[in-house]
Image (cartoon, rainbow, N blue to C red; front, side, top):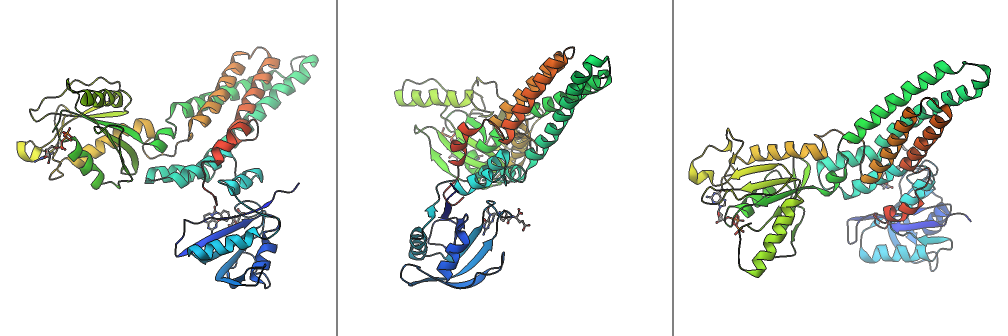
Length: 438
Ligand SMILES: Nc1nc2c(c(=O)[nH]1)N(C=O)[C@@H](CNc1ccc(C(=O)N[C@@H](CCC(=O)O)C(=O)O)cc1)CN2
Ligand SMILES: Nc1nc2c(ncn2[C@@H]2O[C@H](COP(=O)(O)OP(=O)(O)OP(=O)(O)O)[C@@H](O)[C@H]2O)c(=O)[nH]1
């Protein structure tokens, strides 16, 4: 059975200045012709058309019609795009008219991208990159996602695959000639070198951070006694270099999470309750949560109290000590000889130095602006499987039959990386990350 022709509103929720409806599939151009009632425009050339309901002839909108013939289209199928006036009723009327055309079906979330995947226009890392691109809120997230949507990992994986296939061919040639004496020997040692080199390369890829933290934000716990100036600092950080994206009140009155970006690096700042002992039940709960936030933080900003003292912090994460109110104390703003950051949340002095320090510390987790090879834990797992198989192949160098077997396992892992094999179970979850119309 041929795939149904899908349609959906691909642009944002009306009312909007312009709304784009996409129709993708074998019946897309016929549907466009029935709506516009005229000869179709040439491919990739927008034309103004009066769209009419094929059912009653009612004029629905005067809109731009644009055709992308497959397979050179975003989905690989024929695509017709309607660029409408973005009124609620205009969009609703055109969607209703499309629904009335036989063979057309409303698309679900991610359905267009799913078509692109099945048509081989995008592979799995590219689809994951596209999902990340649509979710990107900071510049660093956007750059990383765009590189992956554009095939960054795809190209690397293709290179790895070719080297694996080469090595496998050499090992298998050795096997074929084994009966005829030592003909395969030099091929074999060649293959062993190639396997070791690829294993070393994958090891480096696995050593580097993966994009998971870049996607979710580096968790920054801000601790210190009441009145240390925690909220003032978080507010100042968010208004300076920073676009606040959301400010979500935590589950207790004492924990606020703010998403912020410093130099394009996403952070989730957790403004915690003071960690001192208390008898108050509600406050104690807040403190327990503050401890948990500190324990799971990637970076802790420990602020001195008004008396200049720091509370003990229990964490494995790097701790940056901050003393606020440099405008009152007269301490020179910036880091002192002990690495203690003096700053003022009122004047903003010392904030840029702290921001630099935060971005530097975050580099461990999200890199320093270079494109990361691995965008997520799924990719890390399969590359790790591939790496493990290569190590086994290396260890089995004395037995070409075993080497070949491990190389095939390594190839299988690469197949799962790009989505050639064994990924059906994760596809629904992945495509579910998209909105309707994508
Ligand atoms: N109006 C509109 N804007 C959009 C999209 C869309 O579908 N419609 N996109 C939806 O994601 C993105 C662009 N993605 C696209 C991807 C491939 C092709 C395409 O026709 N590719 C051909 C030809 C390339 C070319 O002309 O150079 C190909 O890859 O061979 C078009 C759009 C962002 N902007
Ligand atoms: N002059 C000056 N005042 C500051 C500075 N930072 C904070 N304050 C003031 O100190 C008071 C406490 O600041 P907050 O940011 O509310 O302190 P907090 O640590 O969040 O306090 P809790 O929410 O009670 O835990 C406020 O009145 C701030 O305006 C600073 O750098 N300079």
